[in-house]
Length: 494
Image 1 (spheres, rainbow, N blue to C red):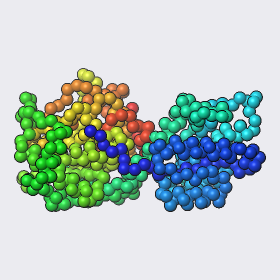
Image 2: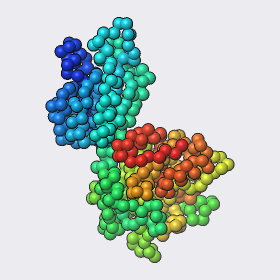
Image 3: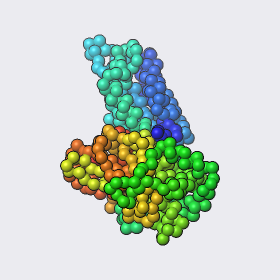
Image 4: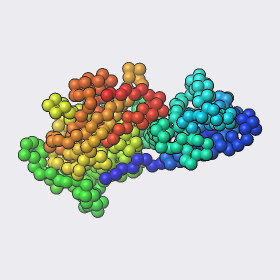
């Protein structure tokens, strides 16, 4: 099962810079640097919607390009430094654009043949000269900027340029691609509406969230929802849409038999399975009607009343939503829903998880939760298990039992500091094979290079919440860029 990495590409504003006096002093130099800038535009267009302002070599052009980028609402400004250029041709542009800036200090040649190099060829490889000047001006002006230094990588070069397979070219373009992906993620995050259904689990102080704080620092919109909003969308038992949902579920999940070790875990009853399918349809309708791109939910309910039954039926449907790119964070953890959303937008999944147990015998940590689960990152087919009760919660019904794919994994948590700033915590580990609990939870064995004890101490030392997003692959480098673009602190636990 796959999930969407995003609905749209990042909007990137590109411009090149150079010294206008060089154009008449060295015929052909402008055309050469323009070709380089167009190469950058083509490479960027593989990952982004590029608004290309071309060569900006005076303040008037800078103002016009900056205004254009602002109109186009670019999410990242890319400055390609072709040769030495004055900083006053750059500052007005980025001030007007109002987006983070990526400065590309990409030299065409890997080195110069000093005894055969004329002034034109030297100047065409002299980008690094003005990058400190530009950086100083940006820093003094409060501009959010980042520099990528390396080799441009030119196909079929005429002037002794290095090719795209040069290690410094590959490294530079890997960084550039990561920055563009980060811009895409931040842009989509700020376009997202996150639903908050019910309440936060009582007593879990780490998960209490300030909606204004989240909107102000992450840019998301938070939609407060009531259980009656869900209840009014519940289909009747005999509606055709319920049968369609049941067929969909059976195409994805296996059904368990009774557990030989846990009397609470058993083969799902048809009535409970059907109820979970009905509530899944209701969740689909809720998400569509309120145009949600994520959801945090919890409702305790009372004595088997209607809302308690609704809350108890959500794990299946919300696992399906996670697999569609709509992360659902249980227990009313709004902050963790945002961490899951970022991981999903980056294409790494991001399932709802916490620490479940420490295994010192085999050096791993069991991580997971009682649901929901991101179906796009499952190892094999997930399982539906009937549960006579949900530990620590009211109700009973269907649990999702699944494992994260074996291989590299990334953990991303979102917490906050004493002064009210949001803070991300990230780590990388490995999902490994082996037996896990068969109790209707989403447990995965995760091993860390630093060992169980060191990892737990270091993770807790960052002051995280007890939930995090567990995703596949190594997303740490791009998460660095995402948090830098958001202007928020990132703690790396390794």
